[in-house]
Image (cartoon, each protein chain N blue to C red):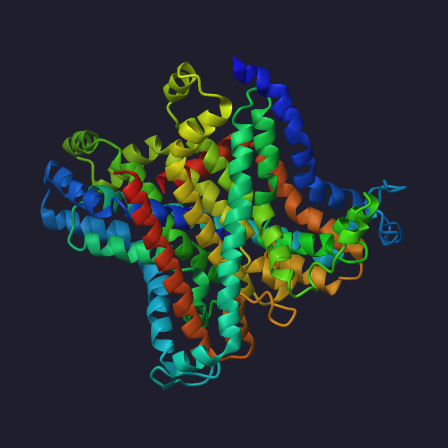
Length: 335
Length: 275
């Protein structure tokens, strides 16, 4: 499904991607065979004619997809075994040389650790806030649309624009955050939010999570609406209080949408790029470098395509692993 | 009924959270009307003495926002239309026609759904370069459509699977071809899926940063997020311009959303769940 970074959807495509990935692979083979039997019931034209029609219906999508996605996937794989010093130079085969080089590059390891931290921050902050607000907002009747709409507003802002906005919020001199802290008597908490190496990754992630939580909130609200209301009535008859209803009815009822939101948040997080690029460009001292920003740096600034390709493979493997793990989890839940 | 009793306490408790979350918007909006000196005084809570509409005029003229908005619109309309034209027929074929290689294709699309676009960016750039599409709006449209194709196909396919085969049968007896069945029978009853595809692809295209950063090099072809980032780094010390430019870049989509929030919400959740 939908949009990660959102730069994925691409966000946003980005927006749709992960869910589709998360939602579909599960029942995949079952559905395929189902489709086949259903197909047999269709009035048969000539089977060849049907195949030809199918080809023409698929052709536009397939052509674009083959040229701009499948070919680049294959070429990335090839590139990771070759060395190339720029877009205009020819490549030479170096075997696993790039992989060895990557293993010895401390920034590769840093960016990998930062990426995992980044995912954890995003799932907890954006996913957690999305869940809490969904629980609160869904109890509202008269004002629900107002709160839902207002809480979703940050998600409409492009992550690059979010970067510009939050860089100003964090500005040490006139920024909203430090000034507000001083004004309410918490001047001791003012910081160089983006210049402190220990804090920078977290600070940038707050900006990304501010943008991201709205979509997760909407998905949780949709999940809450799907919980069978008679379960609440039954719990009430048994004398359950509000907290017990939350623990024994609501949260179990949200299990499937939770898996989905967590996988979506992780895929979105993995594609995180724009906020870091705009706010810190990976600094200070590579302390906010992610795999994606390092790929950009290597490919478009230092022109080390072989090493960048290894990171591309690493990024793809992480995304595929997340998708597989969450589909398994989902499949087990729906049994 | 206990629910109704909770309405106002919960709404009241949520209000400070709302203020906190929307504070960046309010702060930017207020600051964008201030003079340089007022911003420099570093107190975000004071009201501007005069509303400096001039800031917007300056940002619009200096930042070339007219071009940026125009490019973003061309980009968005191109991607949305081309996505519909490519994904609806392909989704129909995958849902309703038996043909050899169908399973194989399905896995190929799953791969595209999973692999982030940043992971294929080097060859992608080379392909665009080879086709002479670097620095063109056509280039960015084609790449973004391709990027969204797996999701779009899954969305349309899973919606079409739910349409009864009887409809196809009946149309075939009337002599309709698959193409006619798609355009005259399936698409008219697929508003929720089409709406989801339009909203999701529009939103992700409008907000995309990574692909435009790679593809669109000169200012006159750039889209809004890219242009704003360039503008903000060029005029980093002129806060009036940065603030009003930022407001220009998010205000239109927010107003559109407030007008159409039902459709947005439906489209996004539908896309997520069906996709």
